[in-house]
Image (cartoon, rainbow, N blue to C red; front, side, top):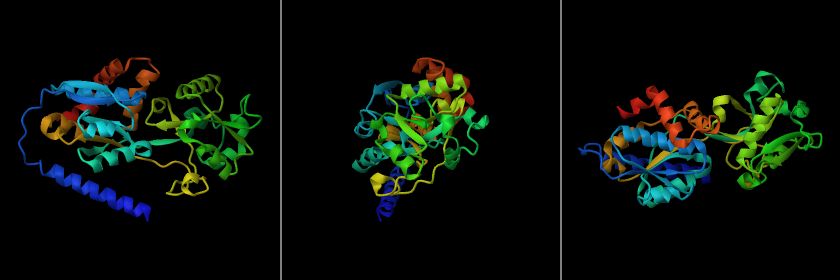
Length: 318
């Protein structure tokens, strides 16, 4: 029942927004305003680099851009009331509620989706698959036969799974491992930070050993190759916090954009480009890799990406 109500609600929201935007279709807008387009920046590489990429596209159109540090969840309220103009990287898994609440309140609209889909899940580096370190991966059942491949000094003879900080997901992964009957062969350890995950991936690659970590996509690791394990499919209610046994994997989700309701009128050229912008998983991974692997600043990474990928972004401006 809850899922049906949510679907109806989202359909109504979408229809309302479509009608509102359609009402401006025949209006002749002037040149873009000289007022700056305000883009929010958060605290992970792909989001910040993409902010400067999107801003760079707007600047190519002659617009002025301002970058505003913004809380991940509060950004939608800020965009709704005009403190931000656009939000360019919205993850369904963790941000859709904040986005839809702002849309419901008025002043914010859904500006479309990126080509990339999002996922937050356990997985292994590509070489684990290529070198057949655990035959049968990425199917989760292969884990039953190769815990020793993922054992570490602190895993008590079991295979180790490196989760993110426990504050991110609570006991989601330990619950899943228990529900799947893997807890006698694997132990879940919590990383202190995202950087600890990246350090472990780098160390494992250097040593050529097996490693299972939490990760997400789009991310800089997409550029080097990371394979998500295929656990039993996610469905509403399958997680323990929702009343299920917790054995399911994570869902694929969308990656959206949103904008303040005045944007199409104040900056028609920039809005037209923004509505077309749709980056792939590879695009976003490349952006983040320039910072996390090549150690460029976010601004320089965006300039480098724009210079190297005119074939991707130029059509958005036409």
